[in-house]
Length: 246
Image (cartoon, rainbow, N blue to C red; front, side):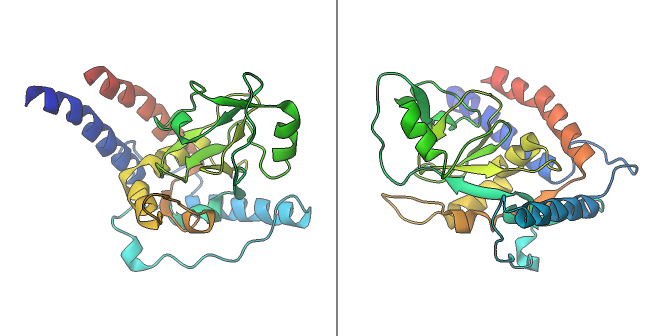
């Protein structure tokens, strides 16, 4: 029993901390922060500019968030949003198994982000030529958020490296603009609130899939940008303690 508790308690504590983070209970609010409503307007303006320049496609408006999608209260300066409202695009990798080779460009799958961090251990490799071809569909960039959408779904990790790599169909690449802190978005997506939604939106049994058009409907709380960074800084203090408890 003691061994079981020792193995489950740190993970339960981590989930609790992530949930506190997205409920606005982890750090105090600062009245001088620009409110999330204004931040959302900046994101919308950035998306409209990129659409006008032909850099991203115009998407259908997402439905308003219903009352039954709001399970808890958030601070007054925050805003309930859908994932698709705050990212510039969501793309995935090729819907086929590419030709692998002993070395070359890393080609990652869900197992490379299963811990919530990008890890190239065990990655397969593709040629530079194939990589360039696949980049026409989806080109991961530094500070994009990677989100597992096949097999094990609902795990997010920030691409914090400048290494060139590509992704399989089971990994979504979420492109962010200048007004969203990637580490906060990964935190929110990994919180119990968003993870539970991802599991409900995952279809199939043996071939489980969290489709791009479904995942962008996930609701999440958006704090002011300055508070996003304070939340992540606090998590960087607390989450390593959970690992030490293991």
